[in-house]
Length: 460
Image 1: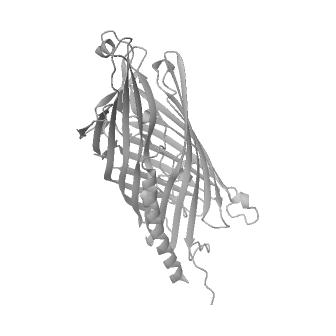
Image 2 (image 1 turned 180 degrees about the vertical axis):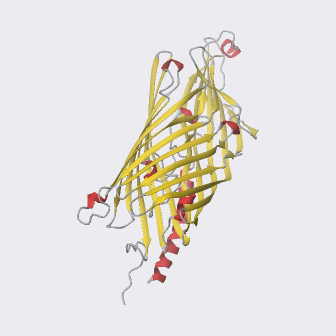
Image 3 (image 1 turned 60 degrees about the horizontal axis):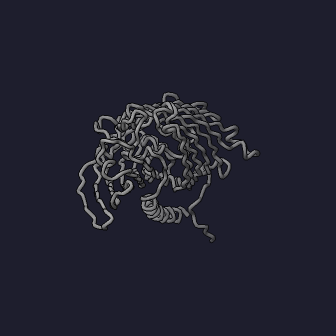
């Protein structure tokens, strides 16, 4: 029977590997974020971690829980049961609402999307040695903006052509494929390393449409397109230490370090006129590099039979990778364009989980886990020196499939705000978003809890 179980797990690994490739291909070219703040750089960075972790505000760098995959810290992969297999997958829906007040006029837009969020597996290699492979969307780009060149009597465009309308649009994403290994080096102390492969495509374009003044001639519109192709390896290292570990409580400290660095994309640029002739422009660099930050995360996680509480601090060094800036097409009340630049970020995350009766045999709902969390920090780009504050509130539940089983279905919601610290008179967009996600954790073991998800029934 055990031999048949291993055969099914092997087949499932092959299916998952193929599914991961299909997932990554499906992510490319989709609009999973819809925000003018994705016009520059790598776009909007998705909140990392499993749905369980994201429902607790994104904490988890110090989390050690059997039956879960720690996507934040590879050291947590050492918490793995022998002769077991864990699969995690799910999807996420998003709603973005943007509001802007410019020159006394209120403008609003909204967008909905849905995508596969994560696919991850965890298998034991040896006692206290676990291997995980995961695929998750790292960042997303999606925007559609319009801009009318303001009147300037000294501008030769206005003097010779007239009003010019610019239409900007972009879409794409960067996907992270991550392979991590965690090992308990000695009692209560674990280390982990992970190789991260980032790949994807981002397309950004514009259409310039001249509107001739009365009596003027006919002018051709111009379309420009830039495509960035990313294919790059990075690395992560992590540690975890159980300061307290007994039958009543566990107190764990954890930390990770991400190398970061320039993604060095392959850039193809072209300009097309109404005459349909295309001019291809070689592009080796961008003004704002597609880069990843050097990142340090440290946290603490406390667990009892009923409660789990965690706090993380996340620092990301964006600025040292790119000192240049770009000029936007949006004018402030002074008539000056905004300058966009990378800037470092600081984020605090906190979350709590409550399970009323994990070992309650009679009442199924008392074995449910209830989660709350919050996250506060800053956006990784500044606009004329204004750095946007970000705030998110999260909630979720975990429903086990069976008594004492580790398989479960998780559901979570997130409500966030961005840019509300900047006065309306500046003219920046204030953004609200709402996310809803569902995830499945399927745990298979031949020795624990009798969860045989991948075993073929056999009758003698």
